[in-house]
Length: 142
Length: 142
DNA sequence: TGGGGATTGGTACTAAAGTATGAGTGATTT
DNA sequence: AAATCACTCATACTTTAGTACCAATCCCCA
Image (cartoon, rainbow over all chains, first blue to last red; front, side, top):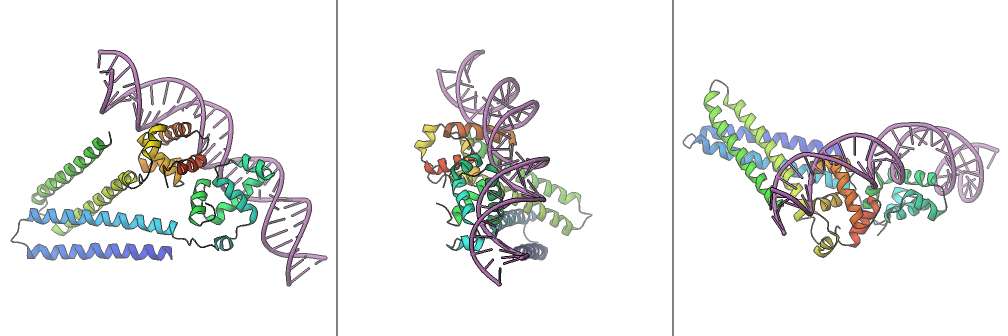
């Protein structure tokens, strides 16, 4: 899904570019009456706008791929989060360190690391801060 | 400080644009031997890249105008948070690593660490995850 | 009776975060 | 002109986080 979207985007952009170029070349023969400086200016503005648009598209793609991953209540089931992992996640969201979590759950810090590491895999994140924002997106924690 | 930077940026952009246009017009008479289509293509790519760059600049500035929706000016004043520290805080709240923050703000990771460290002191926390929850309590970020 | 998942704990390592300290620059203020 | 502040960058260091393995226990279920 994601690579497809990206491909479509890229092809769309390439096509747009080519079309614009062709049109430009075409117009070159139609606007002979006007100053080529004016034409250059229009082209510059146009392609600058195109660049801005491309950048925005790229950003939107990032946001969608990261943010639109179902905030439904069955996220826990879908993600396969275990009870203990959820415990750890909640304490992480509170800002606890691994040692503090270990103390509060009466387990060793190693176990906390195991849970958190599995947690990150399931949430598809790399750091605990990302896990927090993600968990809030999914409504796992408040 | 900030409006000055923005002014410089805008002026820089305007200057760059004008210079590029002038150069373009200049080259127009120097590259008569070459195909104007090639020249058009180079111009298109150049200005598209310029547009992308501008969009990135705008996004960095939007971090203030859009991200500062309700940052409780009183809290900021009371805590003595500087503008740059707030930038770092927002990106931390997004789950970014120090390196990612450095890349987005165009500063070194050392500077990010300096800002974040000062930040933690002012927020009276010890870790970035705590900083996030604290910042949300204070309404600094959402 | 064996498999599988969940929980727990461990070692060993790499990566990231955080602290302490110093220092240079530019802008503002006094 | 001097003091001050925000921002920047750096080194050197300690601490915490995270990964990659492994393994024991328990419980449920086929």
